[in-house]
Length: 314
Image 1 (cartoon, rainbow, N blue to C red):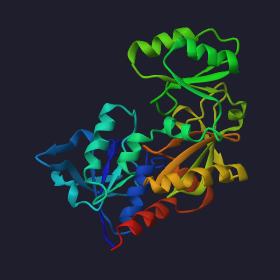
Image 2: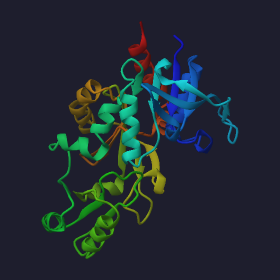
Image 3: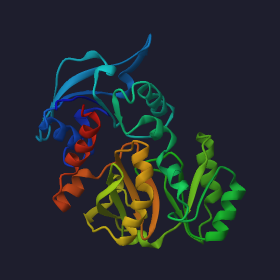
Image 4: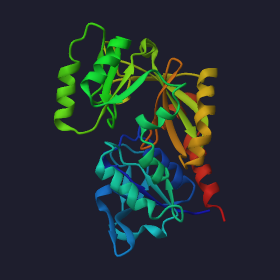
């Protein structure tokens, strides 16, 4: 099977070939004989009933500084693609949301991964709300009095933007902290969105586990340990990845959420678990493939492509 594949992503020239999951997906696709194109979200277009993109054919190779050879840009009809990957990084703003509306016009005749309708309706910090028995105490609110009441109840909390990513804007407010009102003023000064608050989980000192699911099934995990003096474990802000095994609790969480992810076309998902609690379900542009492959010696990218190819089989 040879598929025509387009990656909607941030500029490929800037990716870290030793860490970027999109690069690894492209590398595996190429090894399987698929034809690849890349384009950035600002080159996605609608005109008179057609969804097109100014895209480059691309060949990838694992050579630092020379990892992507781009052909001449051409406007391609995305309806002629077999698979489109929705892989630009958040923020999950109106620009991001607009791309999901446009790609939703192509899906499922063209397979968009992950399904853009449910990416739009299940952003990471909201999908977890459907599983309150698996998550720590959580509040979503813009009202300062409500957030103060939540902090008074739980004492030590994490406060962050609802649609943030990569650990940006994440604050720990311990029982002695007096900055809630100032942070609320700062966030609401530049955004109309609510905030999310969660009870602080001390287990984060031992790591924030990223579990990767393919078509609703857990394939493995990495542990991300915060740097000294940090609460955030994201690798973007210095978190250290290390090998870790799935626990019975991890498998219980995956078994609870997996059927919904599979039903809604979320083929590649990364969930975050701290201790025994699910904190996020990442469907927009999850990461962690390369770290998991190095630690566990399994070809995660191949598992993902097998799931895609099964959907595209005649």
